[in-house]
Length: 112
Image 1 (cartoon, rainbow, N blue to C red):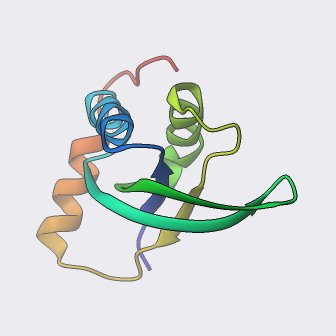
Image 2 (spheres, helix red, strand yellow):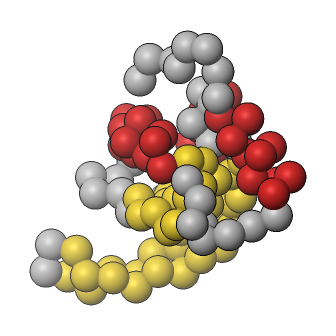
Image 3 (spheres, rainbow, N blue to C red):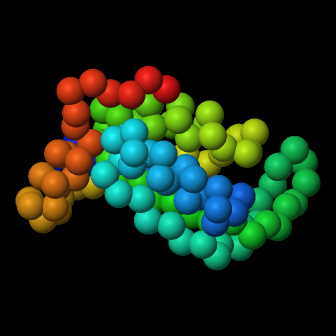
């Protein structure tokens, strides 16, 4: 088991996903963000079945940064209740995991 997590986030558009993703990397809350621009979602919200085109972000970070990352996403997000869920990375290539950890570490974390 590692301290690395992948955070799955949905956004209302590719441009919103790009803004959020760039902010997470610039703020060193994620080492990398992958964006999947064309996701079709069907879900229940406030008693209605909705169908919406969305974009998906996968942010690669560490468990210790999840709360700060979630707060930053919620501050920028257009949704009232954004999807922000994390998945533990059980194992991985050592050099990649080291790069990821070093990419999110800095002397002073930015304020959110």
